Length: 458
Image (cartoon, rainbow, N blue to C red):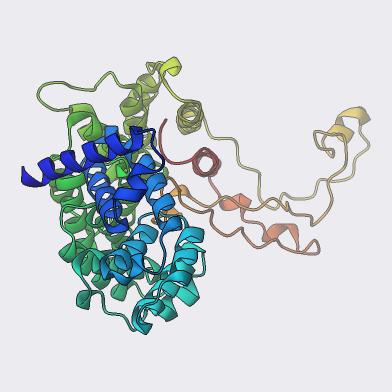
């Protein structure tokens, strides 16, 4: 309550200053550290779900930028103002303003090295930023500055040193609980845990994020990482643990999460996970089922499209209201119906292997004999030629999607193309069941459709 009251008073003061027509009242009456602290308070409210505070964040960034541009060496004799300058930079501030202000500040070598690292980070020079910030321990700095520095260092090291990055993100959470810094640290920890294959860390960070920051405006980024993580770590995360995490969400968010998991799992050939997620999406909560949701019907059908109950699946697909689906899901519906049609279609007759040569007998109907030695285009077949079209691998064999938001499984390598001189009998078409080949091809097309359309339903 005290913190909320302080925030309200500070925001009221800033609103009064911003509305005052006199020349730069806010910039003249408030020190840089006061403006930056106000910015942090507003950002913390946003992280907690107060989206109405976002316009105030933009206004505070503008006011803080103007104040720091006007600051001189005398202002930066106060250590609080120099720390505020660095925090402003790491809070989304203007790198030009930070660089200009640092050039006017007289500070000790460690602070100037830290400032250089922050400027490099803001200007997209991660290598230089890592080198400048490497020797600086965030735990030895004042809390607000140390938390931001730990977050920045953790973000910079996420790719090359993920274990060190997770340690730094833990420090950021420890130094600044209940803030935008903790929200960002948890969100990034989820993604790094996926790349590390650390299911326990993934589950813990996801649980903490849902408990504290589900209504953050950045929660959609968490949702992307969470869905990708469930797919990538599906062998290590139990369905009970997944249900525990989603049970903390409101019913609508829980449904959307399960729909997205069901869609990705169906496309990646994870039938059990897709069936579980589809059932949870249909089940709903508090007696409010989602059995009429066309997306849930579609994704549950995708997970069973090659099962023994194919006629039931075809009936279910036929009842889906196409008008309530996105363009991408309508394409998935078409692909699923095509797969189901191939499953029940009668197999094509197999060619006779190595037929005995027929005796040369004059034919009374030469036009019929000619037709038997031509293809559909009226051209004679080329002896020993094979198709250059790459073979389509089974959908279930595609590797799991990487942790990146809204991506699906990459295509598998194309089959090796045989040289034109290879004998025709080397092809394996004679031993391939036509129905299986058609199903494989159509399921692969389903995967390619999802790559083009994106993995998240609209």
